[in-house]
Amino acid sequence: MDALIKRLEKLEFQQRLLLGMLPHTGHEFDKLIIEKDLSEQETRQFHEMCERLNKEYEEQKAEGFVFYVPLFKEFKESLHPALDPKQVIKACVKQKLYTELMQLLEQNL
Image (cartoon, rainbow, N blue to C red; front, side, top):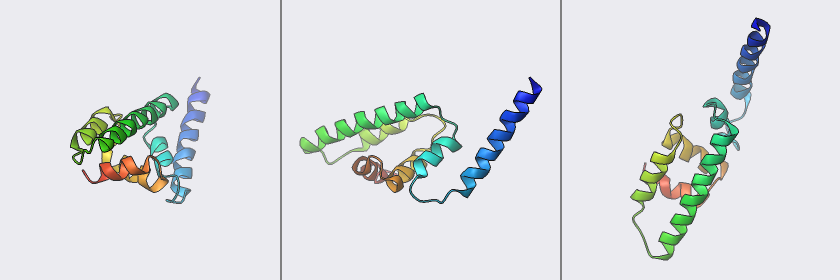
């Protein structure tokens, strides 16, 4: 059992080293997910939340809304506790994920 734990610790260390070697362009959000140790399910929940918020944004925009602070508040409250809203928004903008929504949320930082 100790050998297995040591191998896992070694893999985690090597993963951290590899993350440091990645360029900081193109996959900022993916890198953040790895750094914050989110699972596939937690990442899927994030994407589902963004899809829902994006739909809400489109509906509000169609109705003529210009004040989106409640949308930002909902984003912040729904975000996984390990994630910082500012970091996530900036990473998503750079990775071009939910671009219009994230640019809107970025205005509320």
